[in-house]
Length: 300
Image 1 (cartoon, rainbow, N blue to C red):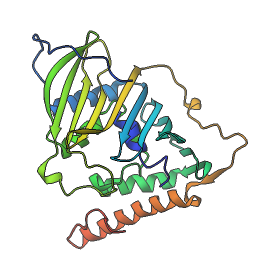
Image 2: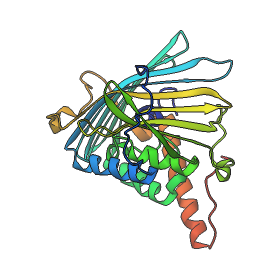
Image 3: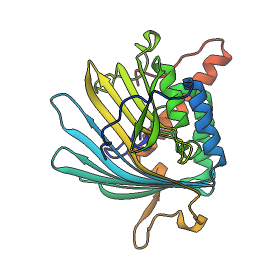
Image 4: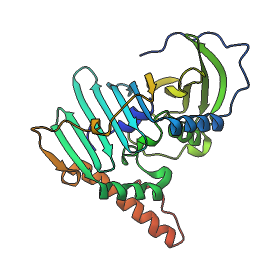
């Protein structure tokens, strides 16, 4: 996996700094549960014909450089997806990543100081194989491995996923600039302490989210912060959200004029990642058929 692709999934869905929040609204209505918030987000996602948003993220490694992203996301129905991100590591290294997904394939454009610009195309057959593998792996699918984020652009899947690892609760309702937001927070679940891969990054033990809940604006997760031992290690925020903006299928493309496009399986970093996911799913299916679940592959 390349420098620019390693954190792409979080950059998209762990969606600037927010203005100061007002005190808790004494007239706040009944607090929803986290499950109810997930359901409300899913309803908005299903109803929206299109979604477009801008976002920023920042993460830091102790005694290491910060990692910052800015970008945009566009989604048309459940078939067309376009994300464009710019990345900055520390004070010197910069990169770009652009992904377009349609029923005909997935195109990825990456730019980083090590490999320059690379544009790849993933065939619809490879897409289907990865999607099948994701169904087999479930929560064990590696982050960023499967291009399928278009189904939950307002954050329902991200919130549901975090609820499996953190003991999330809706804490209170806050008002910012006249707009209602639910504050959701929670500590890492005890049964999640051994989950996940050890990639050398700080292990979050607490998460806090801000969910926009105003009736006159789109319901969406607009901020997510992760903490490790009281220190914020990642923040992702949505700057703006627009629903039902006119879009055409033809606008979902990467400008590859005059540029070489190669099959994704001809690009070694991506091909290794894809093959690892397919092999992991195969082992899990074989293990299930034999009456045991090998779980995620930690050692290869």
